[in-house]
Amino acid sequence: LAIALHRTGDLPGAMPHYLAAVQHSPNFVEAHEMLADAYLEQHHTKDAIKHYLRVLETNRTDFNLMAKVAQLMIITGQGRVAVGIYDYLLQHKPNEPKVLQGMALALASIGNDKQAMQILDKLLKDDPDSPDALKLLALIHAVKGDAEKAIELATKAHQSAIKRGNEKL
Image (cartoon, rainbow, N blue to C red; front, side, top):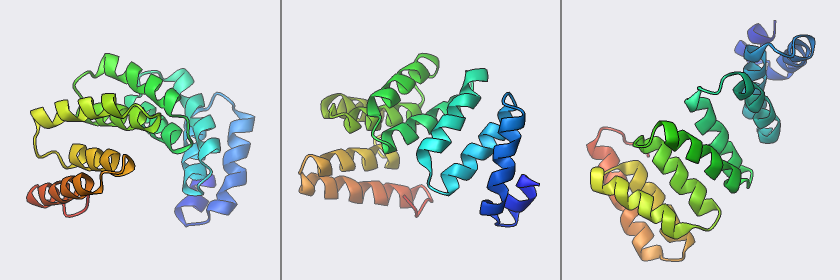
């Protein structure tokens, strides 16, 4: 019933059913993930994290979910936890650009701009026109107060995204 209500847009009506499912069957991992997704849709990030972590307790190889949790940790000010997650992910996917970009963002979120920029520079050596790496580098420069460099990099990222057929960045 929760899924049907959720699909019809009745997320408030679905929530009690999701909650009942995880209370009735605490080991029902899929229910925890659906509940976490629902919490996230409602911008209840900390509740979503709690249930995503429950999913990861039983599935330590869901690298996409780990990366999602790491991103949520950054959003909630838990950058050090995110760095730990990305460190684990890098042990398994050392050359994955999205994981390296996530690590750079996590490092920047805890004030380690130098190491974040080193990672992004490495990514840009491999792919000089990477829109995502350029965008993150622009954000770091913006936070550091270098508006001119940030604008230059953001413009380059946008132009690169358009060249690659992705008008949205």
